[in-house]
Structure formats: structure tokens, C-alpha cells
Amino acid sequence: MSNATLNVEGMSCNHCVSAVEKAVSGVGAAAKVNLAAKTVAVEYDESKVTLNDIKAAIEDQGYDVV
Image (tube, rainbow, N blue to C red; front, top):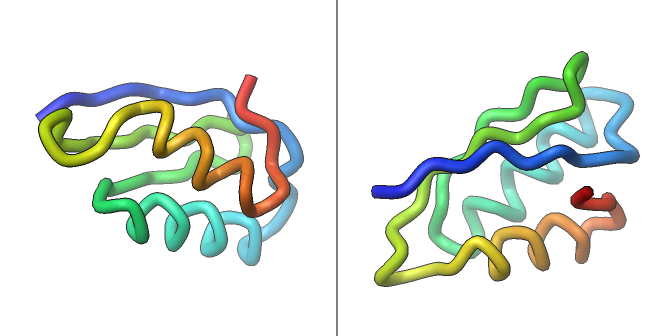
């Protein structure tokens, strides 16, 4: 398993947290959002999903991965 922490702009509430966690889960990874720090810690299996797939899933929800 691989781990990464992504900086995500645009998150402001618990709905945002849910949307991001659900999007990441949808591509087969696990996410833990830190709303105050505007970060998303992800854990994923590189043989099943790439970090770019995870970033794209978050961006598809309307957030910016910086």
C-alpha cells in the first residue's frame, strides 16, 4: 500500500469532506480529510489505482488538487 497527502483547495464544510472521501473511495482508495489543513491523506494500492486517478476523482467533484 502507498500513502500520499494531497493539498486540496475549495473544501469548506462537512459536505465537502464527504464528497472527497466518497470520490476517492469510488476509485478504490481510502481517504481521510483534514478540513482545517485542507489536506487529504490517501492510502491506495498502486497495482489497482494511480495517484493521478485519485487526483482526477477529487477534481471531478469540483475541488483543486494543488
